Image (cartoon, rainbow over all chains, first blue to last red; front, side, top):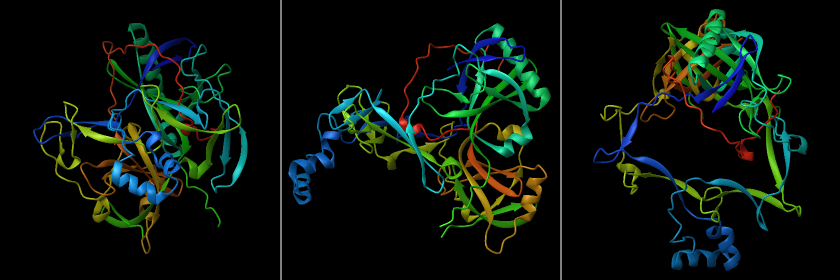
Length: 234
Length: 203
């Protein structure tokens, strides 16, 4: 995934971000020692779910008898099909709909409805015309880890020799400060980072480390403080 | 009733109760409702690659397959380490004393976070020794498994003020990059994501 990012001198470049994966020390094999894989398969499509069967038989007992007798819940052509390249669509009683009006129902932590408002899909600002901004706002790493939960971490990676120098310098500056840099996006450089259109906004922090002639630049995303929730009164 | 987790720090043993917390507990949640052009409610479904098969929530399942794509019974699969050696089972962390070791901030920052818990002293237990050390800037870790199984997760104990938290995840594979380790940028298309993933106003 590309990111358009600027440095302390307000020079910008498009580089890559890669997901940070947990160390994987386990794999699964079959009885012959051959590798196995997990795949998602179809159990039943919408036309074979209970509401459709109930509509057809109009009685749960009749549905039960049909299940025993004829297996109407199974489509022999489709059931077990590997599901790849699926997409999410809105469906109304009229079928698949392409134009929907969406509303957000915002609830307080105690479950009380706070507001209902039209949903506005935020544009991604990680690889936009305006680069993600080096705000010059630093927070000590020691403090950041005690204040925020970093729910999503990515590694920033160079794409050529020029951007190697660009990112190495950033990492070195941050390592010397022993601090993280708050990043902001958007035209005014004051918005949280949004990776995909309509996606979650994050407070993003850049952390740098260097070791000899190599560097490590981590993009830590947080949408949650490390704090105790308020006690909700019954 | 929830079980207590026994921890040990510098030979001092104490029991804590853990309570999972997430963003919704702190800030609330957002649900999305949608309507078609006629005002009829619309719901999200999965559309298969054939462009016509619609799948409800719960209409799919995960299967284990071999290299040929044939289904395998889960009871027949064997967990092995990277060298192909069978792995011993790990015990649940609740049935034992868990020794805390000092952790470094840089290691913690490489954690791929799965879940967050707030810690409270179990009945008749005192965790002042732990919280005092956390307040002084210490951070601890230990291998954690909720129910036991194949492998441990990494658990970090971090303090904020008087509160203690346990952050569970997997230590990430953080790479130091050299000049010859450049990434290849692929053209990126904007992607619509699920309304389920929209859960808040951030700031």
